Picture 1: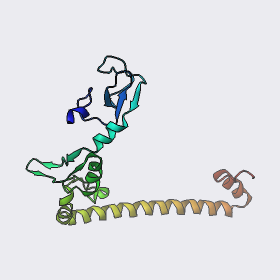
Picture 2: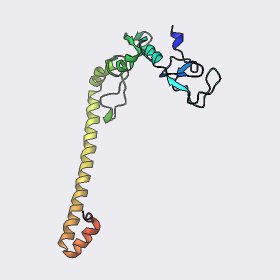
Picture 3: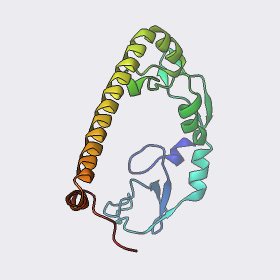
Picture 4: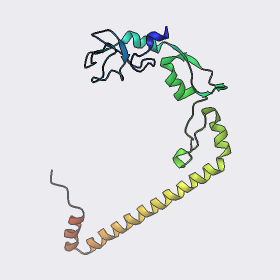
Length: 178
């Protein structure tokens, strides 16, 4: 009976079921905030214990995948405990980020359409990747120029002799003696 898995506070299937020890009512762990009141009208406080048997029973419930449109739902069904892994790894109807998101693509197709999306947007993806390469090249050139300027400054200070050593110590103080 699915009703026996319903939280008496939020009326959803319980997540991380806990039992209120004074009355025996089980609710979601998130619903059992210490300042909230149990349906038996006693403050939850710290009178909650994990309801391991109920948690296990809920995780064994048979569920269907909820991804997809009404006329095109994912056909997967299995245990509730396996649904998150199904969504993360296998569900063809799961919305996923484009492979080229790091380069700026904001399209999020269903997993089953990712290949077609990449093929359709191949030219745009290449342009995004090339633009990113150009930006990285510019950053690298700036970093190289800054390093060359710092090395030139050090070389000039070293050429300056003792005064240069004192100046370099101010720029790069020696580590404290061990």
